[in-house]
Structures are given as C-alpha cells and as structure tokens.
Image 1 (spheres, rainbow, N blue to C red):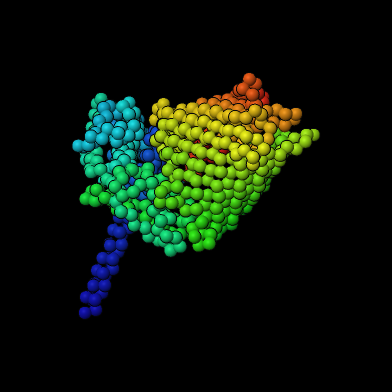
Image 2 (spheres, rainbow, N blue to C red):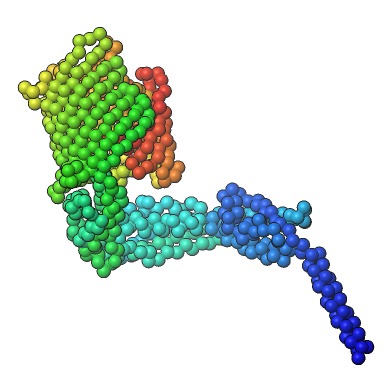
Length: 588
C-alpha cells in the first residue's frame, strides 16, 4: 500500500513538472516571437492629406498603447493600407499609392513608416442641379448662385456633402420650407480623374405663413411680439422674414431669448403655423464700460435701461459718454411698435464736442416716427436744436433751429446685415421753421451704395453721397446740421471731422458736402476677408471752392452678429499721414 502511494505521488510530481516546463516553454516562444513594445507612426504625405491620415487611421490611435504585439501590429498595418486609400479618396485622390514599412525594435519602440503618393486628384466635371417639378426660376437661380463646387475644383467628399446641404438650406430659405433632396449622385471615373455631379431637389409645395402662437409672456401683451412680425397670415414664406422678425425681437431688449419656428409639414403648407417662444429679460439694467474709438479717442460710458417703464412696455434708456473729443448725456423713450408697422420715439441730449479746434455745446429735443420695415423705411421727425459754438479768439456764436424732416431708405440687397449684391439708397429732406430758428434754411442729403459680387469670394462696393444746405450763408445754422467729413465711416486717412471749412485755426461745417468710395473685398473664409479701398470727399461753404481730399488703404473684414467689423489702415493724400480706423455696421 505504501509502495503504491509513493508511486502515485511520484506520478503527480512528474505531471506538474512537465506542465510547468511546457507553460514556460510556450511563454518563452511568445516572448521571442512577439515581445511587447510601443509604436511610432511616421507619415510621409502631402500636407493636404497629412491631417486626414493622422486622425483617420486606426493605427494612429494605438501609438499610446504600451503592450503592442507583432500579430496586432500586422493586423493594424493591413487595415491602415485600406484606410489610407479611403482617406486619400475622400480628399479627391482616387489613384493614390500606399507603402508601409516597419522598423526593427529599438529601445522598446518600432517605427511604422506610412508613405502616400496621392497622384493626380479627381476634379469636378459636369455639374447638374435641378428642381424637381418646380418652375420657380428665382429659387433655382439662388441655389445655383451659392453653389461653390464648380467644374475644375478638386472633388472632395466633404465638400460634396456640404454643398448638397447648402443647396437644400438655400432652397428652404425661399417659399419651400419642406424641401428635400430627391436625388444625388457623384459619378467618379478614376481613369479620367473626373467626377460628374448630379443633384435634384424636391421643393415640395410653396409655404405660406399661418396663425401665430406666442408663449413665454407674462409682463407684456402679445401685441409686443406680433406687431413686430414682417409678415401676416397668408404671406409667402421667406427665411429672411424670420430673421428680420428675430432681430426685431432681440432689439427691443424685452427678451433674453427668442425662438421662432415654422412647421415644415407639407400637409400644412397652405397655412403653416408659426410658434414664437420667448424668455423675458430683466426690465432694468445698468451697464458701464471703457473703450477706444479711432474717431473720438478714449471713452468711458455708463447707461441705464428700463424696458418696461411704468409697466407699459415703454423703453427708456439714458447714457453718459465721456470721450476725449466728445461728452454727451442723452435719453430716449421708445414706444412699442404699433400694428400698422410704425414706431414712435422721443429723445433729448446735451453734447459738448472739441473737434478740430471748434468747441460746441448743444442741446437737442426731438420726436421721430419710423416704419419698422427695413426694406422700405420712411421716417418723419421734428427736432429743436440749441447750440453755442466757440472758436479760438472768436466771439461765440449761438444758433437755434426747429427742424422738421422726412427720410426714406430703400434696401434691395440680398442680405440686410451682410449685403453682397443690390442697392441701398437713402434720401433726407428737411426745413427749419421761421421765427423760432435763427436762420431759415432747407437741407437735403442723398446717399447710395451699390454691392456686386465679382466671384463667389470677391465683392465690390461703391458708395456716393451728396448734401446741401439751402441758405444764403451758414451763419446761424447749428453745426449738427452743417457738414464736416473725414473719419472711420466717411473719408478714411483723415481725422474725424477734419474735412470742412477752415476758419482761423478751426474746421467748421459747410453748406455742401460730397464723397465717394470704392472698396474691393476678398473673403478668405465665410467670416473674414481682406479689403482694398479708396475714399474721396470734402465739405465746403461754396461750390466754387470745393476740392476733393482722397485717402486709400487696406483693411481686415469680419462678419459679426452686429454687422461687418472693419479695421483699416489708410493714407490721406492731403494730410500726408497714415491713420488707423475701426468701424462696425454699414456706413448708412
């Protein structure tokens, strides 16, 4: 019995020894064949492909993995070859060649060399864009006008997808809210390095605005929202009207947030419901700030706003501006827009200026009625001006005027905030009231701006202005109603208000002014560009003594939520100096 037990124990020991030796031998074989290591990916490819390869290859994401083995690396390399060819194709290179080499192990790291020779890119051949069943030539023209993937361009999958979405978005901006893509094909022929594109959009039915529902109001009646709508039930849908509506709502300062949604259900196209959701803002707000203007230099401001004065939706605002060349205290009361599309406001201000050795102190009180239609916008007003002007070593002059005026602005541009094509024209006519004015006079100003796209990335803008005071002389007319020019938004290259009538050491306003401007802009991206410009203009008291002053230069352009931002470097020929100018929004 004892002998048998000893034999069994010996057999077990022999078995465990054999198993242990086998496991050790297997582990040794694995270590010898594929010891663990790290990898470093080295990409040899043109810059146009390098970032795409770096971010799109699975092997790139394994570089931080410290337990790489040869079998895993070999699998990643096989996948990397196919992924590199696919990445090159998305960038337009369908005939690319890919080579991959793996270095030996050095200090626990193997370098993987990926070389991609892209070859000739595939370029766009024929482009076919059509609207399925629609006969709306204007809508089709708008879609074609914004299309950027033109014949001869390198065909990239991302650009193709983006252009399809842009075309659909542009069509939906017109009457076709429910537009869809009916058909899209990109037929790539690598042998010819060519891709033919076909896009068919299904516009669906034309949409019209239906009933409006407003939610989120507690302080204000629904009319504060509905009266601002640039459309009424039954009007044809247009995305621009929605954008104008939203800008009007935000401009009231009644709301911290506003959202407008039109139902895109084709079954409701005849009267698509409009849903407006608002979040009311605090009614009172105090703001302070400091800044710098290239016209009036250093600035400190403080403003107070109450958008629900006396719980009646009256908007009251007061502002104190302390600038190097201008100090002003002003207040405005604006009434809510009425259902007939007009809005009234009352204003008062006291201002002191020290510009070009002319010191003025004045007060203005006025009332204005203005249409809220930005496309066709008439306005009427009545203002009283009281002003005292002082030149060095001269007797102060006092001027008063009760001035009534009517204005009209017409905008036919493709976009109200960032125009690329179309015209903006404005006419201002006014007259002083006798007996209550120190001088009887008439006043007229005409302004026009023309925008035209030269290419998809290049614009040109031309602007002209003329102004005249109809009176025997400028004596007794407030400086605020006479003309001086020069500065950020008129003739760049000259100091603010430096172009006018020279009297002793001061520059004062004249009875006539004229200016013209030409500007070319190249947009490097959707939001920023570079411009070259030339401005010319002046102001004078007599037409016979009129002489144009010219400035020219270059500047940066940025599209911002408040309109175009301009930072310009300009040289004034008459002033013989270079000046920096900054401005925001359109010139008029």
